[in-house]
Image (cartoon, rainbow, N blue to C red; front, side, top):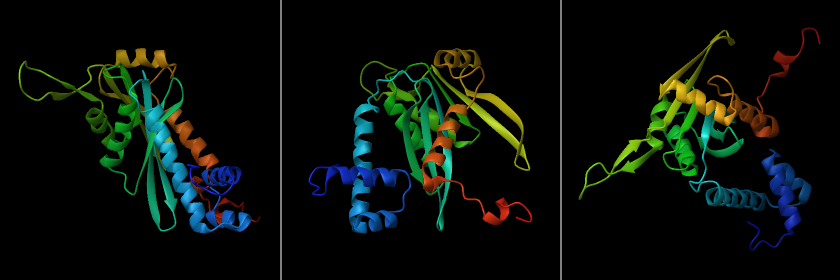
Length: 240
């Protein structure tokens, strides 16, 4: 991303780091005497380079994923709401991919799971755990499949879901925003094989989404733009 830029590389790295941690562009412009368009250009170049590195290093179909968890973050910005879909490899805590969408629909899940598929070895044993969002099971089945030639001779190969794919769903039931029950069920595959993959990945004793939820919490904590906003009036104690 530094190719062709005339500013000192140390300054560019500082600016990109501040942007990554949610520092407002206007504050960087004032602090370093830069043009707003220059800062935005560095941000875009850094993002594009990170994407190229991720595709070149992670999305090469070489990982034995074993156990993957996926979830979304709701981001409320000025005049809009966006959704970020994230996926993590549980055994190594490797972030496999992320997508952003203005709507929480099947397209968001499809794009995220295709990134996961690009990271995985073909037809390996795989457990994918998600929350109860109805779009996930079908998106997983659409992404985690390979071409199979069923007949000899001419003709197209058909796409077939991996026989070793297992989908676990964790549904949290709440009343008045308080957790009352957790339902764990298989949306695809075998519970016995799912438990075996859980043990292989050291991802817990039961179906869960704990690891991706921790990642979501870390992302919200470290990035100011994603921090949940609380009204001072609601958070203040009575009489304070």
